Length: 294
Image (cartoon, rainbow, N blue to C red; front, side):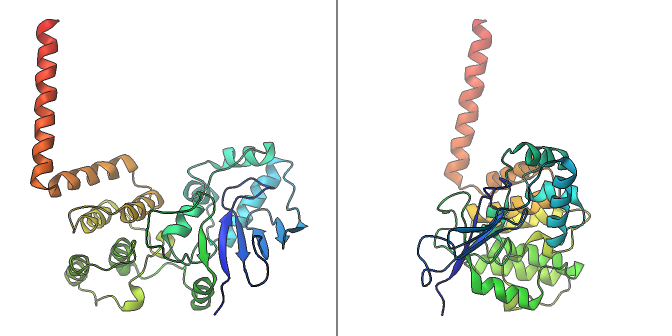
């Protein structure tokens, strides 16, 4: 049993957030990474000593080449898609300009590592509080789980028929807890699709890139939202999973928020619905009063 774990941190060379994977092992050294390597520019550190400062990015061509190589190593051939998905929507042109001019580049790798165990440099250890991350750019990762995932070759698109149940499983497992109502909902959907029940090894938080991207993701996202509201209140970690799927599948986030708002209203307790009605009434009466005095 090892106490070693991994964290994601910002790269001091290329300035991309959460691009560095740090291996921490308190049995070897405390407080600093045994090894740290930037997946983008190759910046490397061992026990606090810089071994490789990383690629020097002095023109647009070099910057684009570096990003393309990184995307391909992550299994994404479409550089524009890679930037949109992993660099918070930053375009290729903007990303390359930032690299050349030394401006920080945001990324969602810390979020991906938090939500999707086994990806983003390793698998995250579950926290009792799914919303709690110590700092935005440093996410704790479990080394053993990462190694196991790499050994099984996961990370490649699966059977298209599995997209729906596995996406739902991702929502159900977001907080690390299986509720009876959630499992019943999942089993009912799987039965309607004429598929075999998911095995225990499939009940995990699947990353969107592990599944075949649907042509029409709206209905799947709607089902994911309905699952999140099975207990009449969406959990924060479940919603983060749904938003990540929506973003990856290029579904308008404004539409996703509207779908969630409708479900929230539909499943709200009676007293909360009454309070909302009262607030609408008060707002209407105030508006009428202003019109009379104007």
